[in-house]
Length: 159
Image (cartoon, rainbow, N blue to C red; front, side, top):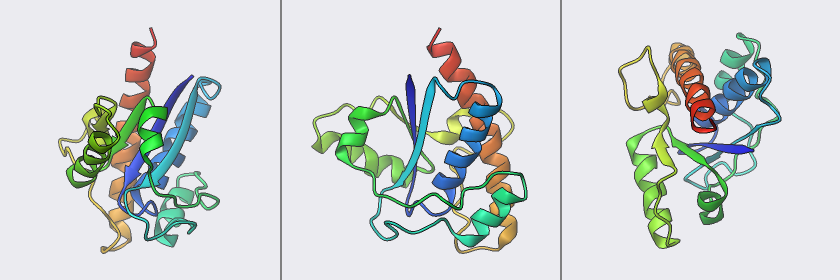
């Protein structure tokens, strides 16, 4: 069983959307019994809250329900427990690397999620929180692309 943790700042926009999208792709392709998927935030601001209503709406427009997800903060234990820890941007990647260093880990499993994308050149996933609803649609497009690339990579790595 491989494990994936998506990480953004607050765990109410990008990372829960990535969790929902990737879970759907994994389920639709028949790998749900081989890959576990979760999301978390580097901050503690939103612990226990549902995703942003705009993220829920944008995902629902594509047949993905993320409304039951609840925000949580990433922990040092997560760094050892997950095979793939995917940061949405460089700031969150750096926070995760600092946490890994303090936990005496090497952080080899921490990557930028967009490094798996094929159709987008951006290396960082923009945070749609302070923008309009169109930002959530763009983030969904980017997540779909990176999720497909991630699944390919996991299947290749798993041999």
